[in-house]
Length: 212
Image 1: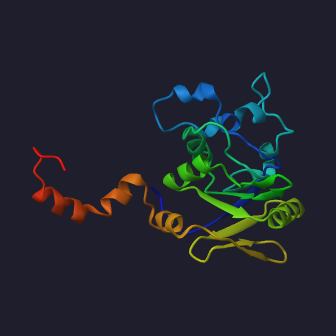
Image 2 (image 1 turned 45 degrees about the vertical axis):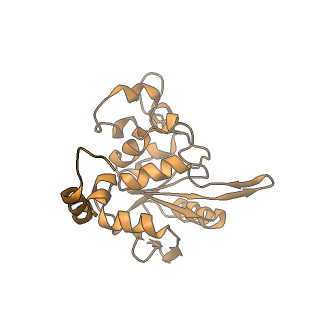
Image 3 (image 1 turned 180 degrees about the vertical axis):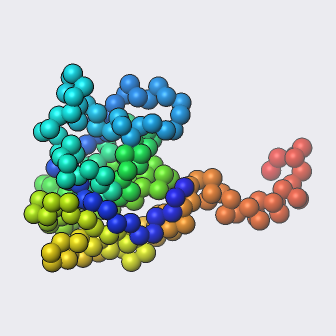
């Protein structure tokens, strides 16, 4: 898995809440047993008309967002089914970071990301950043005012720097375990191999005929 240390790229905004995994990657694309080729299908029901032509009204079809590396959306991104294909599609479309806000309502907190989606992200080198609603509103405003806006996401420093006429720096929090795995590029297998010396030592003393 590619480590995530510091990434700079264009910021794209998707002003939608509750973006579910069936919209991220529709069910008909789950038939593939390969882990490649999903990028073109990202948001395909939104970005394409029924005749297959691009829908100019879909935000991510705007030329200003071409080759974007950072996606900013609203709360509860990645809700719905647990399909890991959704994360593959986001990554293979070129994104390295997704930013969303946690929302407070009269009925309680609405998360920035669905738990399973966020867990799948860290296994695939995709950084999810949770900010406040005010901070995400600020991101939307700066992107709207600055066509082609680029930002630098520094995971080690836990900062987002918007390269606008007047630079804006936003600090974010992240679970230290997730941060470590992303910085070192560790997926589940690599995390296990971190303990290879202990595993080998155990295997040398373990009787395979007598499981314990």
